[in-house]
Length: 193
Picture 1 (cartoon, one colour):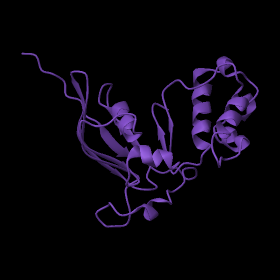
Picture 2 (cartoon, one colour; picture 1 turned 30 degrees about the horizontal axis):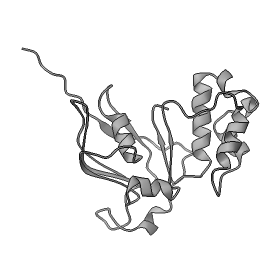
Picture 3 (cartoon, helix red, strand yellow; picture 1 turned 90 degrees about the vertical axis):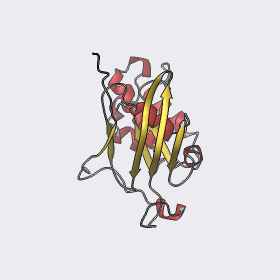
Picture 4 (cartoon, helix red, strand yellow; picture 1 turned 45 degrees about the vertical axis):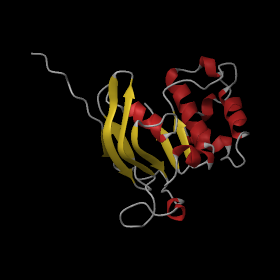
């Protein structure tokens, strides 16, 4: 007979680099949800299930990511990694189960400026320069980190005057990363960085 391959999604803690990622600080003020009562998870998924057409993309995932943790979702193509990220960002709702970001609905956490994301593609205007793109995006936030700082942190200061359409795919992804750093989010989600 024919056996169908099962796929699974694993959330694996990633060792913290010696410098870099900040520790989440707003979580304690947003109310308890962890078992020890010390505050909500930065991301909490409980019994989350989601379908993509006839395929069950996510099958009852339970994940609690605490403030300050760096986590990678690992799995083969079709394991539900991007679907899980979409639900965490409030771009889709689970068929069943619950998704919370800092103890609240993902859309509410995003509207409070707690979350930024770097998606796989899209969202860039090809006729603007890298610097113009960052300046324009920064103008959308009431409080933004300095453009020079985020371009430097993303390693693209040297190409600030280059048109986005002339940038390589990797440079465009670094620009998306810089844009995600502008609002100084408490949670940064990277989809296929």
